[in-house]
Length: 75
Image (cartoon, rainbow, N blue to C red; front, top):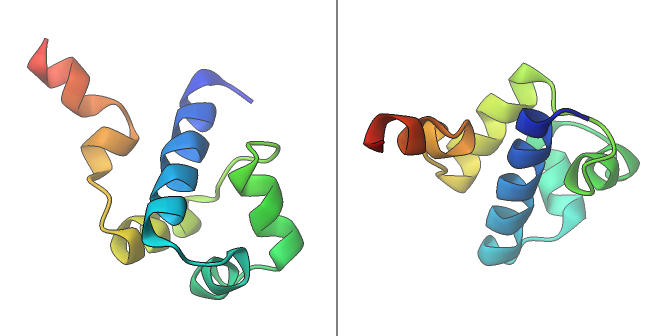
């Protein structure tokens, strides 16, 4: 995966851990299988755009932080 996809996977994984939700619960939120969410969280497969939108809304992640935009704007 490319650097952006890896960054997104890392940030979402950390948010899932901080929210203390199970992979099964998060899979339901994104409407994907547990196998798929495992691959996404491990960074083996990139997230679909619709999954990113659902994850950001559910986990309350700043979209700018997710894409590294807040660092770019602050520089």
